[in-house]
Amino acid sequence: MYYGESTVLYFNGAFMNAADAKIDLYSQSLHYGYAVFEGIRSYQTANGTKIFKAKEHYDRLRYSAEVMGIPFSVSTQELTDLTYELLERNSFTNAYIRPVVLCSPNMSLSKGKESYLAITAWEWTNGYLSNQMRIMTSSYRRPNPSGFKINAKVSGHYVNSILACQEAKDNGFDEALLLDIEGNVAEGPGANVFFEKDGVLYTPAAGNILPGITRATVLDLCEILGIPVVEKKFKPEEMRGADSAFYCGTAAEVVALESMDNIPFAQPWENSLGSELQKAYKNCVLEKEYTAETINN
Ligand code: PMP
Image 1 (cartoon, rainbow, N blue to C red):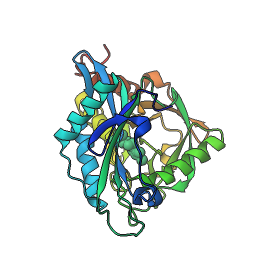
Image 2 (image 1 turned 90 degrees about the horizontal axis):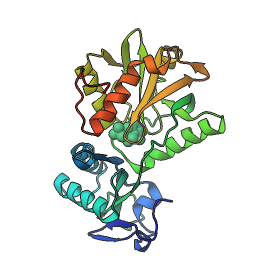
Image 3 (image 1 turned 30 degrees about the horizontal axis):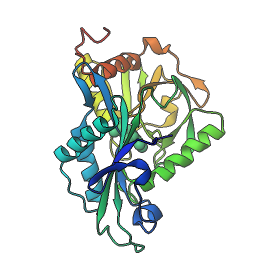
């Protein structure tokens, strides 16, 4: 359950009880998946409740709206302030925050005329993904970048994620791995992917993926920790049977992959570069120091 009797959300200019919020059934967003959204985390840190990378997320929200032609001009500062207020009103510290920009009633296929901002949040302590995931290469490909604004976070894109995720679950796996239109490894349904081979990390280059904010954080951490990382196109054969691999995303954080298409990754997770990055990421979101010396403390 995402909300209870006293949960408050923000919608179209006001804070209100979640149960009282109503959207119009003629909203363009509902019929066509024509909405943009974000997934953001807040953490209880030694310095109080902190929203991780609020600026990056809200900049991306505005970017997503802009490329989709949805009018939306609330500033990052205003969005961040509203979000902190929402967390405070709900007494949330460790939370998942879900802002969405919805379009007004309009059954035509024209650009959005007017938009409404909703920000919801719910308490979140553990990642939604299991400890070590068994993934399968999906028969569904990520949307063709010639047909979609693939680097924007658009609601309609997630129908593809749902198909892939359900296919994986129906086949007894924890999660899917999607290829892009050219058959290269792209990403998970809601996370980016890295694999390790001979001391080097590899991740799909930007272009056919949602370039995640967590992915960017991991790349920064690699630089700090001196971990070599290569962004490139690669086929699933190159990743299958690699030394180790992980998914990363706001909700997933850094999560180990146990196997791909039933072929285990060779190395124990504890010895992998991903495990080191998992600890570093945790330190980072909790605002603990993350230098090469302090990383494992
Ligand atoms: N790819 C997809 C398809 C996603 O939905 C997400 C989650 N937003 C990611 C990657 C990871 O992005 P981020 O690290 O910004 O959460």
